[in-house]
Image 1: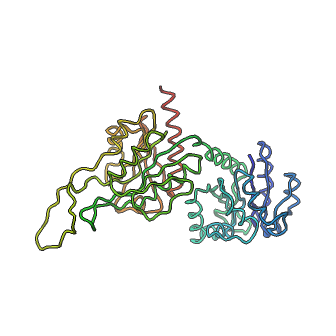
Image 2 (image 1 turned 90 degrees about the vertical axis):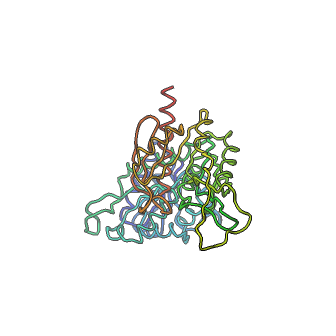
Length: 397
C-alpha cells in the first residue's frame, strides 16, 4: 500500500499519527500532507519521525512547481483524517489553495474521508450537502463516532477509531482493482420511440443509475462500454459511450458489443412499445380522437438471456407494486443472474433522483435489500454483490 494521508486542522489530528502507524504495521508506505491548521495541533516532525518521510505542508516550499501532481501519481489511495468541515467544503467545490486541496484535484485513485468536527457543524445542511457530493463521486466515508466531544458537547463528530479507518482503506484498495480484466457492457437511460418527426414516446429515466454503474466499474479497473439513451449527463471518464435513441438502436449496439463483454448490466428503461408505421409528416391536431397502433419493441434482456453464455447478466426492474415477486418473475423469465429492483412512482428515490433504495434478487434464491444511499454508492454495492454471486455460481458448478 502506497498511501497519502491528508491531515486536517482539528483536535483529532493527533489520532492520525496512530493511523499512520497502523498502516505501516500492515506493510504500507505513508506520505503525509498537512494543512496549515493541522500544523497548529500536531507538529510535522511527529509524522516525519513516524513515516521516515518529509511531510508536505506548503504548496510553494517544494522542489518543483508540479510536485503535487507527481506525488498524486506515485500513490494508490488518498485518505483524509480528520476531514474537517472546511476541508469537505473545499473538496466538494474543487477549491485548491494549499498542497492538500491541490493534490486532491490531481489524484485519480480511491479516496477515503474520515470526518471529524463539532456536532452542530456535522449536522449543518451545508456539511451534509458537501458530503453527499463527495459520496456521489465514489469517495468512501468513515462515519464519525458519537459521544463526548472536545468542545464539551455530546453527539456525532468524533473521528472514527484508527483501526476502523484502516479497514476502510483496505476495502477501498480491494475495490480499486477488483474489476481488472473485465469488460462490462452497461445500458442506461430511456429510449425515445418516434410518433412522427417531432413527437416520441419515452419515460422518466434520467440515466443516473446506469451512469453511476459505469463510473464505479471504470474506477474499479474495468473496461466499460456504455450504451446510453438520450440523457443530459456527461460521459463518465474512461468509459466508451455509444449514444442511441430507439430500442432498436440500443439492441443493435448491445448485440454488436456482446462478444467482448464478460458482464452485462441492463439498467436502461427501454420503451415497451413503438409505433408500427411512423408518418413522414407531423400529425396535425384535430378535434377528433385518433388511435395509434403500437407494436412491442425488441426484448433486449430476453435476447441476452438466451445468448449470455458464461457471462453474468444483471437486469433492472422498476415496479410500482409487488416489488420482489415481479423482480423474481423477471429474473426467471429472462434468464438473469441478478435483478436490481426498485419501487418507482411517487417516491424521492429511483427515476430522476440522486439516491436509490433497491433490492437485489439473485438466482441463488436470495433477496438482498440495499438501504437508501447515493446512486454511486448503490452502484459500488451492486458490484460487491455481483462479484460474490459470481464466486457462488462458480463454486456450485
